Amino acid sequence: MSAWRSRAPTSVADRPSRFDFSKVDADFESDGRRCAGWLYRPSGVSTPRVVVMAPGFAAERTFGLPAIAERLAEAGYAAFLFDYRHFGDSEGTPRQLVSVDRQLADWRAALAHVRRLDGVDGRRPVLWGASLAGGHVLRLAAEERPAAVVAVTPMVDGHALARTRSLRTLLRGGVAAVRDRLGGLVGRPYTVPVAGDPGEFAALVGPGVESAVLAMVPDESDWRNEVPARSLLSVLRYRPVRHLDDVSCPTLVLAAGDDEVVPPPSVERAADALPEATYVRLPVGHFGVYEGRAALDYQRAFLDATL
Image (cartoon, rainbow, N blue to C red; front, side, top):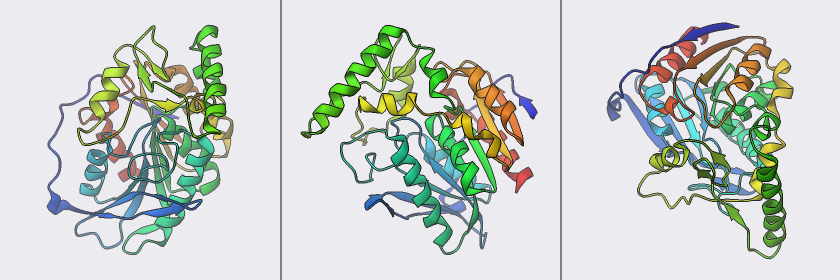
């Protein structure tokens, strides 16, 4: 494992010119549900390699990811960015349900769709994911054989995440999940907050977490700070770390040294376990990787060196 470390993020840069790329709708179906996708294609590149991207826990594709997709397109890569079912412009009820199994199925459907797209080289795409999606891309890399993986602050071990919570909080989450499952049978899901501050009950808890999440939500979004409570159990049972030995492609693991959501030691251990990993740790919090240019510069350098 190699390691790059940066001491401070750079300043935020302007978005690239729309003359540098095109953006089109490219929806697809997953288990009979329409999932909304955007394809960013760089100008002047005939068959660009594709980076397939999806948002993190309970997030939508509009939450900071278009700026990253645009920068990738500016650098000569196509980017396919999609919403999971239950989120954003995709179909599926109840709204904002986080189901690991369904999200993995949506990823597989998205990859199959990308491989059929005209005008791009989708035969061996790059998998890009942040937070929960960072765990997804590592899990899928073991079976999809992509050209490379970029895992940003990845949630790799639900058991490690559970150990950061008190027994009382875990029990409260279990009761809420049961209540949600029973209510869901009659179309009345029971929800819990996505993000909260220390001392509050929420899926993601930490200093400044709620304000950081809400700051990423565009004004026009109808997203709410809530998820059906069964989502908690889906994530806490999820352990992509068990599949890392089967990942054979070059992998960039981008960690947040001050991560208040995902335990940083779990991310570093995952990077150590990957056969061909580059590990980068930035001195920022979980959502700090979306700010400035440092994180994006590392990703572009990795892709340029790998592809």
